Length: 243
Image (tube, rainbow, N blue to C red; front, side, top):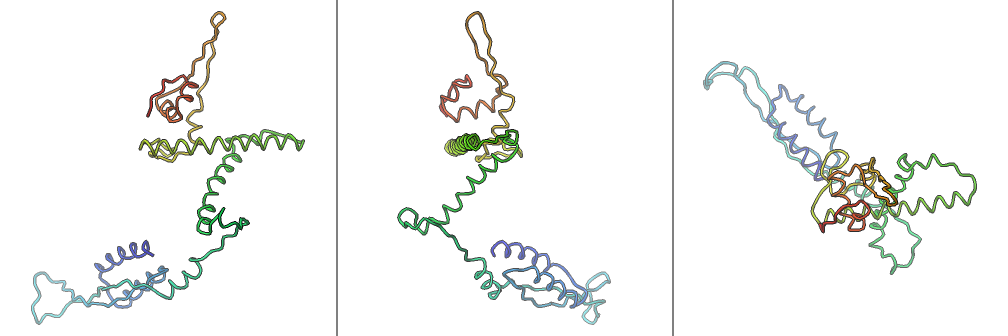
């Protein structure tokens, strides 16, 4: 309702500076605006504006060349529409099989319901091409069950990593560039994983010793690894700095 009122008040301001050649045109314009309103209606009066085409100040006895009309509008709440919207949009049903009010209070049902979106986004990630599950073909139920366990564990790691990274960005008041090029404190791990595409571990054997070098690490990737702590830094051979 507030959004609609703000947008329509801007429109009415421009309308108040517009002149109409006849009352019918003004009425038609107001009618078209009223049709678009969901919670308001426009009340208005028309003021006559005499227009002189000749140059200079007109004399008292001069008749105007034409009469134009300007609207003086007032935006009002449409209580009937608001009541109808309140009955239809202001109520909804949430059902749960958790009947223990101590374990799940009535006031927590809605917030718990909204938290499901995070889980659903994780399963969406599993289903898309990034996870490449469609390239795995299994027939035995036991192997399918095992794959589901692995996928669930992967989803847990994905969700925890995303939560931990966002928490660190919020705590340090820093940002990472999103896929759209905007600074964000809430990047998705799917985007972070894409940034790490091309990072490889090179193993070199010199005599009897193996040396490991992490390739293609840039400043942005090193910064991201820092947020995951000293263990992650050791994996990527980065000196840990307490952010």
